Image 1 (cartoon, rainbow, N blue to C red):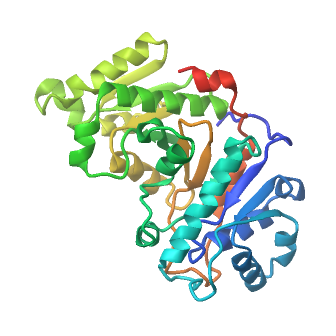
Image 2: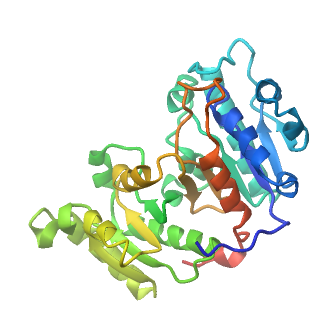
Length: 332
């Protein structure tokens, strides 16, 4: 990745995610792996009691004392039990992320890095939530179709046109305009990552991109018109083609960005090749949010076994991005 140089002016808001998961542990371990100058650019958003208890358990009190902290998402000690799925912990994750997104939107930070959440805990708290992209859209006042998930890992960048919904619902929502919007959001994200003229590969909806209509009309009605619109706008676009064919050629004909139609179509190759090292970017709004490509790992929370690799990669990635410019918010 040809990223922009690390800039001392970039500031990162780091949230803990679900405080009963591995988020607090990997946050402190990742911070310990940063240089002192890099840590000075990070502010943690989350419950202070959880941080203090975790830092003591890991003997990382010195790391915690060297990082700015914004107290948010408080959780009672009775609810703060590592590994416990609890609505109070789910609410804490959302409150911390919301505060960090708002602070970033107001210009205090270059990007947000969010710890892993637990969707069941959030649902038990009575909060409507379908992933960080939807939360970014809500906090930034945009539509749910304006923010997309892009997974980055193992040399792949895959933006998802649809995400946490059934295939049946996704098929009903897929349309050329949505595919174009997802692609353009992905291209803008590539620009911020230092890729000036990304080569884009668009996955088909059906096998073989519908094989000329043999497997249905979905691609004729959606992906082919979207690809044509994108080419006419000057973007370097291949496809639509079957996802298997495009990915099989990645070693010899790599694309800088792939556009998936469904959740599993984009997640499977990333999770296969970078199971614990992927970064999830919520893109399309004026706030860039990065999160780990893995969950809250309740089964090992509080044991000290969690590895911070994915979170550390996310921090390094956003520390090297170019700040969002007015030009980038307006161009496609």
